[in-house]
Length: 140
Image 1 (cartoon, helix red, strand yellow):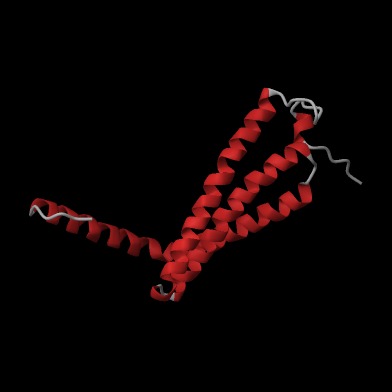
Image 2 (cartoon, one colour; image 1 turned 90 degrees about the horizontal axis):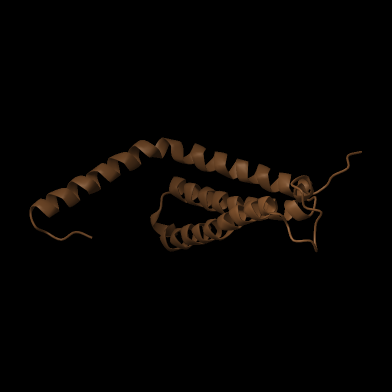
């Protein structure tokens, strides 16, 4: 069938134990820079979601869950990209990418109708803070 090789080989790296060339290191560093922030963002959103669950309408719960899944899967995609530089894990990488695409589509689809309401809420908060500031009142 197909003969797969890791991406690192195509980028001029014969593989471990040899030290990877700068191009492979740059790919790894860039992807590693995405793993931790996405993981922390998904943990932060899930923490907020868990604390606010009873106060949120069902639609906002679904938006929160799909956004959390999207963020977590983005981080996992970056981790899979690092692993695929070393080992030819193309099938698991494809599964993670498809799952991330589905989560992204769900998050966008669920939140699309809410964007105008968010914009209105943002404007109301801005006007209130501005009027409080003009009256000399502190605001959060």
